[in-house]
Image (spheres, rainbow, N blue to C red):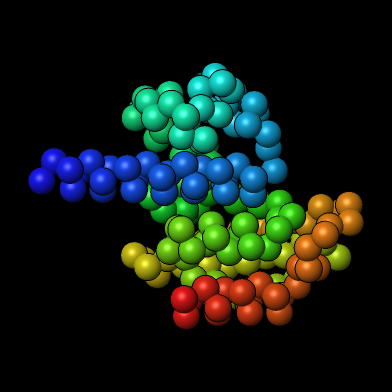
Amino acid sequence: MSNKKRTEKEATEDRLHRLSTLLIELCGKTQSEIARLAGISRQNLNSFLTGRIPRAISEDKKLILLDTLGVRFGRLKAGAPHQWVVKDPAVMIAALFDLHLKVVDVTRTDDTDYKMVVTDDYSTKEITIGIKRPLKASPYEPLSVELITKLSKEMSHA
């Protein structure tokens, strides 16, 4: 029994590492900036994210880290402003998948910005995420309403 619990705990830790890494990339801030905002040393944050030192940060600091990244109780915070910088659309889709979010609507607000409305598996509240596209040329497929819609549909059928 304890082996199964340990495995579940490891799976939860792996998911937490992955989600934190995805959200740090999407928020457009460096690990140093996130560490400062969450009150964690950059070295401990990096050790936690890579899984090198499983207990690099305490359980309380993990909750503060997630809150800093816009997540509370395993869900994207409703009512909080969310602004993602999307370099690779696959990273955005992976974060949506990990957070159990479904895309309700995507609209273009200007040349590089979009507004995405999502909902999760647990409530009908809609959450708006502002999406910015870096101005530099990107090696990834250009972001578009069609691409976000297509990727989110593929994700929901996976």
